[in-house]
Amino acid sequence: MQYLQFLLSKILIKNLMTELCAIALGSNLSSEIGDSEKIVRAAISKLSTISEIEVVCVSRWYRTKAITLPNSAPQPDYINGCAILKTSLSPLKLLQALFQTEQLFGRERRERWGARTLDLDLLLYGNRLIDTPELVLPHPRMCDRAFVLLPLVEIAADWIHPLCGFAIADLAKNPPDLDLSHPIVIDAEALALL
Image (cartoon, rainbow, N blue to C red):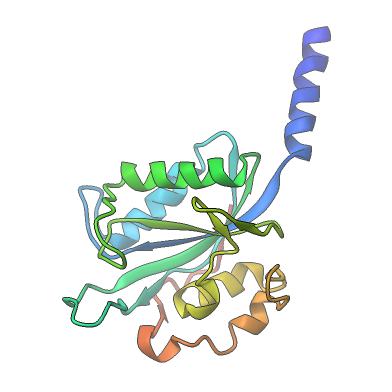
């Protein structure tokens, strides 16, 4: 009986110490897993197997033009989306879990804004503000990216950006790079609520 009470108290504590967070997913290179769409879907499945992470909901998937540095070679289009997670991991531990997941899918960090099999960005962790060499929250460029804001508004429209004070719905009305990235919904199905 004592053991059962101990387990129940651990579960209760774990549930009390969770935080909602938002991540962005992207891929524009295939791998042995398949094309970019299969990769981002498989990444969601992989994240859901981590005991400290619960995938709450996932946006639709978007095909997005790659935005590259000047004089860079063209890249294939990206598949992008966002997900809301509930986690008991600290922000830095969650970031490490995202990096490990990227590596499982063949991600190699060679150049900034280079093509990649999988990119997982931690956008928001509750209403936390963090500015360290390892992690900046909210993600410093999320408000400039249509390929982040359009999927994110589907699943977190009322979430208030903790730095600028605007709801995601307001930020998504006119993203600055909309004409460059041209996000187009490729997944016309209803949002995946897990």
